[in-house]
Image (cartoon, rainbow, N blue to C red; front, side, top):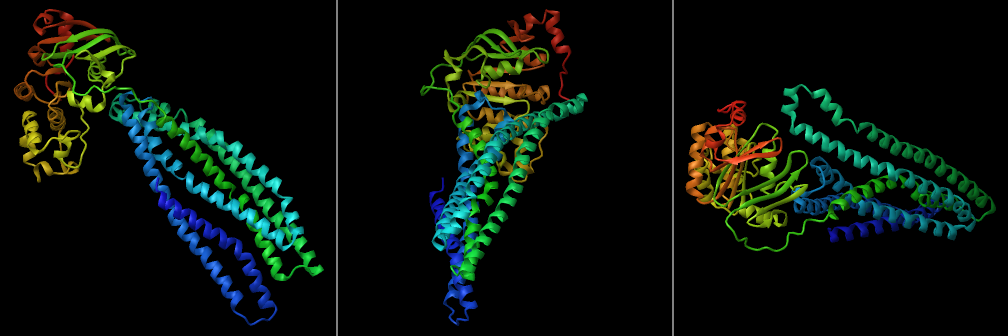
Length: 544
């Protein structure tokens, strides 16, 4: 939190508060001086000075509040992002909901302190105005105090009625964001399958609940606005009437009447600030949603230090939803294993479990005898490299994308690109490895090879490739595999593939069928089985 800026906001709020309380008396003195025909400029100059201080403090305070809100939002984003990264793949928050919390909720919660400062300032002004009104004429103060119970009841009712609606609105907004993100990620699949209408219905299904919460929130707001709009002029009218009797009795001057009206308006400041209670309620709801993230317990990963072993992977009775069921599997260190099966058989899920990206609902995944769930993200990154069918390339330049998440220098990056058979393509770019990613047109196969280079540059103990060479022709794929074997000898490799040529080069093939391991054996032995051959006849040998 930006403490100096917070102190500055409080100081300017105090200056504005003091000026607001002094302004009615300054106006009264100036008015009486003018009406009385006095030629002194001192009351007028005092009025101008107090008014200038109030305006200046309000302007500076507005700027400081905006900056404080932005810095607080950024601070919250860092904390929430750190917690989400610590939760990793074990996060209970859907991607869209997490994004909603990182964006809207951080902004909303970041405004809590300025809102509290403004409400505190309004409270001080209202209290001070009542005291000054009593000093001016205790009868006017009694008249004003008669309106306080109505104002408190109005504020209490508004805050109570709007809190639940605001929280419901925030939660449903997060749910909508999560559904929309899922739909955007599968946009091409939705378009190809002709299910756009059905998917739109699924995404918008929470909309009635959002509408209900929004209507409830704004209905409460509307009731508050018209009640406050009636209460303020009613109190002013009663106070003006009482002040008129004071003028007739000779207790008050015309300037005193102006001051009394000013104090009444300031005293009712809390009523005019009631809309801030809606903002405060929304900010509290945002803070509550952020607290859910910050209070989520990250897995206790222990302190393992340098991990011993050579890369033996083991699954013990692993079950993941409906994707995998009761999987027992041992992949010895240094072996090359191909994972095959029909679409939907659980291949990607299996690789995700082997790499610690998916947490089993039951059973355990082990690396060299140690549970993967105990490893920190940096430990997983040090021992396991991943290659994906559609890699997300992150960073400013091509070199950044390949070295992302590692301390690799230029030499290591170029070596990894040569192994992945992508160096020549990068070298022909306008600025070579320093070409911005945004200006780098890449085909599917080229993007895959950059993702593969990113996995290689970590020098991992285990290399997991989830269809990471599917867009390469068979000749290039074979060259990449040969280069990996030469550069990373003795590494454990697991490759999801649809090609017989790749499966034939593997030491063993894990054949998945409906989420279960149907067989583990060399490709040549399994090829004798018609059902195994049928797995490959359904897939194209060459990329589209």
